[in-house]
Every structure is written in structure tokens, then in C-alpha cells.
Length: 370
Image: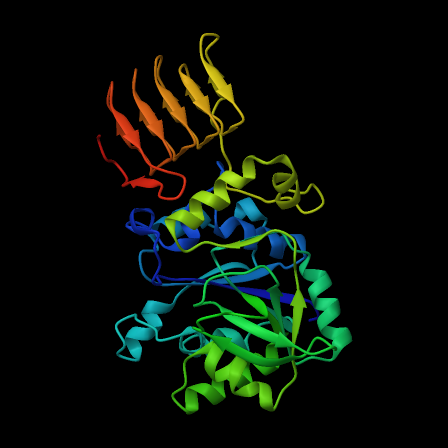
């Protein structure tokens, strides 16, 4: 069966998101007022005509399980194929590794039976925390036209030294792959790959036979000498979020209409879990300026340059600026907040003053009372 199959990695990894991942994995962190991070890659796949998606999960995955459900919100609830949740930790227990994986290849090795049963000719591999709106069908056409064995989506925008970087030749071929370098150069890898199903199975089997587990070392670096790996350069909006500062910056820049229009383009809509809340209410005596407001909010105070998720309440006299407030957060009267990221169901008591900075936003853990 021609076409593409999607595989998304949803797992715990080292990062600086701190309070935001105490109860969840990266992909289920709320983003942009009405979404979770995983919604973006799921929507990219659905928009490209992908009907079968497997999500490899381990770690604190309850939030992700609740969010994805049957996949109905993304038209992936089907009798054949559709959304498949792959609890990799259960497979790992057979291997006596207690659910911990050294790398993506090892996680895929636990799913070899699933990989062999894929009906499509090509497979898209992605992390769950990549914020992007990319036409994957264009990536497939470029992959086929180039004759490459694997195509990696990358960007010229700079990133962290721990990221993976490619050097491309004039034909787009990846001639060098490096990571953990002091002064990164070249094209930054977005951890979005496309290759044939047969090649993926072969690579995973070969790595498993040699006790190899790292995708970027054992495949991107070592196999590039024998296979042709190409880069697909994407210099439009793309964000990989792994620190609180990075999360805050990538969120607040969506208050710019040009960036917001680029990420949420009508040709490729970003789908989210259904929301049945009533419309938000802004009191005539309140003030709401340059903010993204989800449904079900009650704004009676002052809100400026903020992102509010569903069910947030800002009482009279409260002054909230440059903040990100997750679902169910309550800011009581006369409270003052600046540069704060509040997780779900945070309660700010009357008269409290909370001050972060744009270079050091403060995060408040879920269910906290301040």
C-alpha cells in the first residue's frame, strides 16, 4: 500500500521544563492556548493523508493517554489502522530493561512486529514536541525525487549545542553529522525523518543485532557512509521546546499575527481535542489586550500580552501581564502577575504579587495555592 505511516515518540527525556513535566511527558505539555504539543505532528500527518499513526509511549504517559483517546479528534479512530498507542515499557519488561530505553532505535526494536506489519511503503518518524506546520507530502515527493534512502528535515535557524547538526553538499546530501559541539554550524536537525518501511526494519534489525540503540549515532552517523541521507531544509516556523525560557519565548511570539498565521495556516489546520466549553466572557469593566484567549474564560480584571487556556478566571482588580495560564487557573482580586507560567488549576490568592522576568519566567506547579 503506497503512502506514509506515522510514528511519534512520546517519552521522558532530560530537559529544563521542570514543573511543566512533573505530571506529563513533553508531548502533552499545553501550548498556544488550546493545544498540546503532540497535536501539531498529529495534524501534520493527517493533513498529508496519513491514516495510520503509532505513538510509542513510556514514562508519565497518563496525560497523553487521556488526551489522545481513540484518536477521533484527528480522524484516526478507524476499524483498520488509525491511531495505535504503543506502550513500549510493556515490551521492554520482556527484555528486562524496566521500561527504560537508551535510545530511539532500542524503542523501535521492541516494536519490530508492529514495524513489519506496516501497510504503507514509507514511514515518518518524529518527536511529539516539535511545533511545526509542514506539508509532509512535499517532503515525500522530494525524498522520492532525490533517490535518497532517508530524508531528514532540518533548518538553518540556530539551536542549542546539544542538538544534531548536518553539513549538506550542493545536491542536498548529508555529508557530516555532529552533535554536542561547542560552536554548532550547519543545518539543525528537527528530528523529523522519512524513509521506506523496508529500510527502517532492516536498520532496526541490524542495530538490535549489534546492541546499538542511538538513532543519531548508529544510523545518522555510521550508516551515512553506506546509504544516501538527504536534508530537507525548512526555514519557516519550527520550534523544539526543552527549557522554560524556550517554552515562554516560543509561546509569546505567537502573539505576533504574522507568526501565528504561519503556524496556523488554513490550508493545513492544526486539530485539537474537542472543546465543549462556553464562549469566554470579558466584563465591561475588564480589559483584555493583545492576548490569546481559549473558551470558557472569565476575565474581569486586566489581561495584557497573555495566553490563557480554557476555564481561566481573572477577578476584578487583578493585573496579569506577559503570562501563560493553563486550564482552570484562578487569579483572585488585586493579584499582580508578570512573566509567570502557571500550570493547571493554580490558585493565586487575593493581593499576591508574583514577578518573573522575560529572561527568567517563573513556573508554578500544578494545583499550587499561592
